[in-house]
Image (cartoon, rainbow, N blue to C red; front, side, top):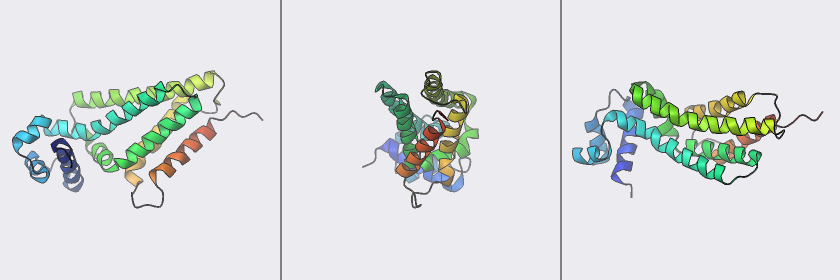
Length: 192
């Protein structure tokens, strides 16, 4: 059974997706979640915080997985593969939340927007550093810069909530494997 916090997040995603952030009141979210005002405000200080938490929950899980993958100290290629697999699969599982967040991001205040950007930047920098280190060590080719490869990875993943459908032909694991293969093939060293 979902916790009160999870019910609020689910209700907010449904309502924000259906009618937009501006047109949704806290009272509507409370009613949809089946809570009291006190129950809502126990978990969220404001509607602004609720919007941030819709995506903050996902980025928190992704950053936790990133730290765990990096701590394994696997080869750079395997680490990059696992990072891509986790990012694609976790984004696909939370596609509705990510789509609502991207569409409504402009409603966040400057402080929340800066916080969101810092968290995303941590992930981008870790991936870019991993690729750049691999290029310097001669493990990855240099046809594209680490920056360009990183932007490509995150560009595809950031667009996933727009086009991914759970009822579509490809499952998240297949999409993730194809993207990882594409990136790693592009990073192969041309020995010819």
